[in-house]
Structures are given as C-alpha cells and as structure tokens.
Length: 238
Image (cartoon, rainbow, N blue to C red; front, side, top):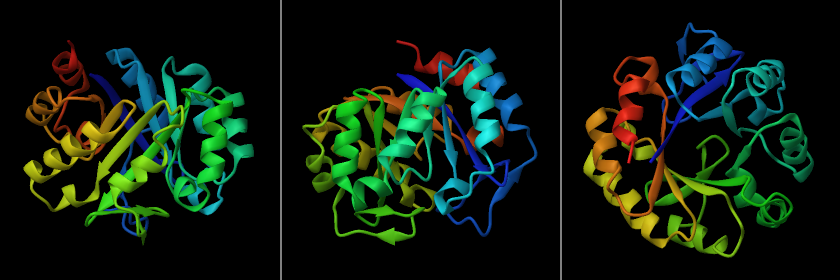
C-alpha cells in the first residue's frame, strides 16, 4: 500500500479543514515547502497537495506549489480548482505527476473523460461521500449521484486512481468508514486510495488488508502527531 501524505493549502499556509469549511481552518504554523521536503526525506514517494484557494480562482499558492514540484524531491498529486482542460494541461506541464478532479467530474464529466484520454494514468477521480451521496464544490454541494453510480460513469476511462473520501468520518464510526471503502473499492475498475480513515497506525493496519485498496492519504494525523510518517510507511510495506 502506498501512502500519500497530504498538504492542504489556504492563504499560503498548511491547514486542516473540518468538513471542508474554509471559514474555520485549523492552521499549522509550518512552512509548506519544508514539510514537503521532510516527507520526501522520511521516505514517502508521493505527496498530495490540495489548493483550497484555487477553488475560488485565487492563484496565490502557485509559486510554493511549483517550488515543491520542482525541488522537494517527491512526486506531487495536485488537486483544487481544476475547472478546465487547459488548467489541467498547464499543471502537468509544470511537472505535477497527477491531477485530482472532483467537482469538474460532476459538472463537466466530458472534460474529465477527455483529460483521461490525453493524459492516461495522470488523472485521479475524487469521490467525496457525505450521507450517501457524492458532494462537490469544497464539499458544500450535495449531488444526486450515489458513489456507486458516480464510479460507474467513469469505469471505461483510463484514470490513474480513485480517491474515496468519507466526509462522515469526522463524526462517524470508523467501522462505517471501513465498510464504505471496502464496498466501493470492490466496485471500482482502477486502484483506490482511501482518505479520511487513517487516524492511527491501527487504522492503517486494517486498511492495508482491504481488497483493492492500494493507497491511503494522511493529512491531519501527520500534523497533530497522531501518526509518525516513518512508522506509517513501515506499516504500509508489503
């Protein structure tokens, strides 16, 4: 299982958001570039960056993201604010290894399908689930799609991966999250990464043995000290 430490950016700072609410961020007073470099030095091969400012069209984090891509020594999977094929192409040209799309897949699925054809194995589909439905626009808008129906709509496209996020995990039972991830991973036709479940090494240990789940994204737990990255990487080894 591959681990993807996460850096979520808002106003140039590392943050954690509760259910996507940008009005009440938990701010981590850590330099994003230094943190990305520390993840690479710990042995992580991939980094997930989510740019919350870009979701509203604000490009203030562009320079720090480009610096991380070019010099931190780690492959970057980038999400946040991708609303056109042009922007996807621009960031792939900048050196982003993969692009994560969620809201775009709901609002303009044909654009995501075209991107997957143009950049095979570089487009990652984000499936954010709240109360049994896929949500978009920073987790603020609930769609009519069930996660199963959403997965089926893209089952024939050459995606790099699918990220399943259980938004209810902030309040819900860990067993419910594991059941959701297990069910959706069995339906997907490409590799699945779990987000929102890895709050302890025990969570990672259980997730490792879920069929068809090949990766886990970890954010808040790495910043608050609940998980040490080196220990998590050791757990994730075959």
